[in-house]
Length: 366
Ligand SMILES: Cc1ncc(C[n+]2csc(CCOP(=O)(O)OP(=O)(O)O)c2C)c(N)n1
Image (cartoon, rainbow, N blue to C red; front, side, top):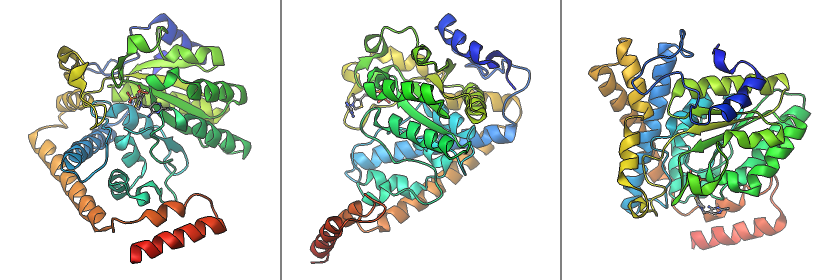
């Protein structure tokens, strides 16, 4: 277990005392800053593959959107260690992953089928249907709208005497909203087993972090709600994983929520509807490129003799085959599925919804 974050007290002291020094276990050059890595080489390779799958999925979707085959798309390029590291700390068979809109890498690792993710961005209502057994909520376009739902899931788990936890992702912009503070407050009161994960990528579209909040860190926003916070290097898979493991253990013990701030950077675009060159100084991306979580893991694994050109090529080929097969499958799903959007509103359809669905089906068949 990792030493610096052992106690609850240390968690929030860390965020307040060291606002410019996020918790790190793997530095930019791939050096391990602790005696024992928190993940085995095999698990690290699995984490790297999940990051790369998310990245290649995002790149493909941007390309498909440009060709008119997808709706607006928000990539998580550069931020994938936040979602992958936090999902690796969960038990996917029982814990909940609650995304905002740029969390493909974490969603896929948590069990979301690739086809579902494609269908989402093709505008198909079937993309919003999460298969049974996958403990995940759908994509949420309303900033911070999913945070209350995550607290509800976690509190519900506690009321049922279970120890299943929920991790919810959102950006630093979301933490300016009532939809962040209200569920955070409630979670502190009822000690809901929830992990609030803020991906601080410096930008809320064109609003930079320093104009978003005067708080020194996002992590310390938890303190007033009795929720310990920790700021971690969000591009360090090991730090994200270790901090989330710690938060999960606290939550399962009944000690309540934790707020994790992953300091990261948006290496891609905000969405396909955005032109970041209009507001983002070009040197910002340049500075962050070398901190890319992919490069960092590759450098680390290379030193351990687990990464070389052949391994890289085999992994990329395997990912490409997986993406190609899922994209083929998604294209075979009939485009007109409007009626489906009414099917999952309630557990049992109301007579009015049933009537509307039948009317829509009639239109589609005509
Ligand atoms: C409730 C709400 N208000 C405004 C928007 C428009 N909007 C879309 S993304 C975005 C920025 C969000 O920034 P942040 O929370 O930091 O997340 P990021 O996009 O950087 O991941 C805004 C304001 C929205 N989708 N929902």
